[in-house]
Amino acid sequence: MKQTVPDFDRGRLAELHAVEEDRFVELHPGSAELAADAREHLLAGVPMPWMTRWPGAFPLFVAEANGARITDVDGNEYVDFCLGDTGAMTGHALPQVADAIARQAERGITTMLPTTDAAWVADELARRFRLPSWQMAMTATDANRFVLRFARHLTGRPKVCVMDWCYHGTVDETLAILDSAGQVVARPGSLGAQVDPALTTRVVPFNDLDALDTALANGDVAAVLMEPALTNIGIVLPEPGYLEGVRELTRRHGTLLVIDETHTICAGPGGCTAAWDLEPDFFVIGKPIAGGVPAAAYGMTADIAATLQDPLNGHEADVSGIGGTLTASALALAATRATLSNALLDDDYAVMVPLATRWTDGVAGVIDDAGLAWTVQRLGCRAEYWFCPPPRNGAEAAAAVDEELDAFMHLWAMNRGILLTPFHNMALLSPFHTESAVDRHTEVFAAAVAALLN
Ligand SMILES: Cc1ncc(COP(=O)(O)O)c(C=O)c1O
Image (tube, rainbow, N blue to C red):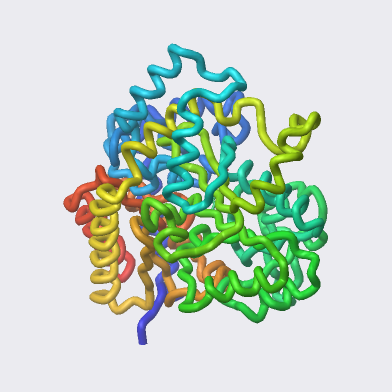
């Protein structure tokens, strides 16, 4: 029978991991020194908590990131399959974006007035994502928060519905899961919830239309907020007919459908919405659209836009709960224009997707040869391996997380010049990756499996 990693091998895993921990410390004296300094005045030694999630005793300190490569302060070079957790999916330091930023910085970074890039950006978003009316945000979190406010305003309904084990940023209503009794509870790890999420949120398993029907039947749900494929608890693809069913049910129950394509932009230049002909009421995109500069956007249908004109033009628009002082800054708009003009285009996906396929083929070959019950999954240029058969929903995916094995695989790879996204085992391929970089990952992965099963 195929196996995940048998229990009797846990001792071996711990031994191998300890060797890799020592190796990491030896390879990174400069990062060790900087980490010691950083611990003095930075909470948890890092400027943002997710940076503690990398393997190794301390974070790598980056000297330079370019294309698909990162060089650390000790001169170690890495093939970067994390790409800033999608923030740099275009590849690091795109020259056209760097130029646009430099030019704009000399002409003013933020003025709270639109620049000549504003309408171009909105036109391009409308072309790519097939919705006619757009607003900017600083982050996808902000965009989701604004859209949920709009949805409650438009429908007069109090609740939102999300998928079990989803992630849409630090949006209070979405940090909720189902417990084993099917009740809505705060997601493990979520700190200081504003209110009990059971009051604000219904949670349903992905790929379960009956559960969604029940969740919407009360008529109190303003919006379903979802990714078209889950990407944040591993890649969980929609089953045939599922997304059509979601659209039909949301329409039938008068609930707005918000599709968040912040990660699923990996599927193509127009995300899954264009690739799969989805018809959201609101569309959210963040992370890579400005080549790594903070910027996000949300689009809406013409009907919704017509209804929202008044409140947004009103005397109190500045306290509407929508917007933000640095949002749609001249810098963000210039970076977004440069990114959308030069990256995330058909020609880029024509390179990225075959590279991601090569990555998954390589990993699948190793898994097969080793007779393991592991899976590899792909959506466009995003790929990921799992230590279990393909999960159907977020709870199945969450139940299969193996933190010890994750930690080992990531550290093993990092010590051999490969960076994976530190949350689960995810890889993103940019146009700057090469076949030999992908093959190097396959080699390193194969060596880790061989060491584990030895
Ligand atoms: C689908 C999705 N939406 C929104 C967000 C939030 O993005 P940000 O942290 O840039 O606000 C994330 C972050 O991972 C995400 O994966």
